[in-house]
Amino acid sequence: MYAEFEGGDKEVFVDIHSIPIIKKLCLPISEQGEWESRRLWRHVSKALYDQDVDAASNEKFKIEEHQRDLRKYREETGEVHEQTLFHKDGDNWLFNYPLSKRKGYSFYLIEY
Image (cartoon, rainbow, N blue to C red):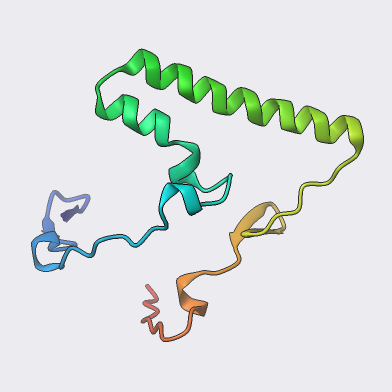
């Protein structure tokens, strides 16, 4: 992957061929929570894998329609949705568990 500068100069930004591939560790779909993305979007992903754009669109519509119905229900009943992974910080939403706060993670902050 290259970075390109205004003058047209390029330099290696990330050498993806030197980075080892690490397989993701995920629970089986049957053990995932209702809102975990791999479970929620599995039918969309399968349809896209099968190159069936119409089926993928239909499955996506079902997910979005369900989310709209839930929002409407919450508004009607006054139920408040509790965020578990993000928190509001001014106009921004921040992830509660960024890499920099995880045990055993070290990073370098580069200032320009």
